[in-house]
Length: 158
Image (tube, rainbow, N blue to C red; front, side):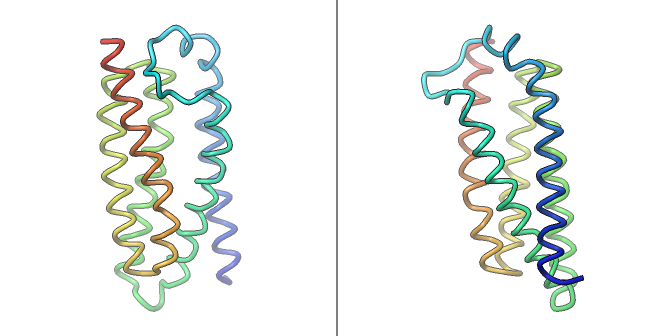
């Protein structure tokens, strides 16, 4: 499979993950979410969809670039793609915990774990392909912000 097909495939998987997350989110964004206390730095709801779409595309490109290096560095690529898969599943699961279960404590704990796995994924990706590592930096920054936001919401509603 060519590099571009690998990238396209992983971008599609990431966008599908984002779509699954949005289904859970949409069900509660207009009902439960407005009723909870949020910090003053909470972005407006319309910000999340375009930011996540861009991040999922960048994540997919990064993973596709790493996947393309499989023949050159099999063990590191396998480790990176395993971590990538785990963080993508945790990403989807966070939406379920936060919006469906409405469990703010568990969502806070889970997003900290997600952030750590993203950082580890970034560390491996940058060893395999520098551009792939760089493409994960905005994701790391955004999930760092989301971690602060989630923890703040938990403490405001404790």
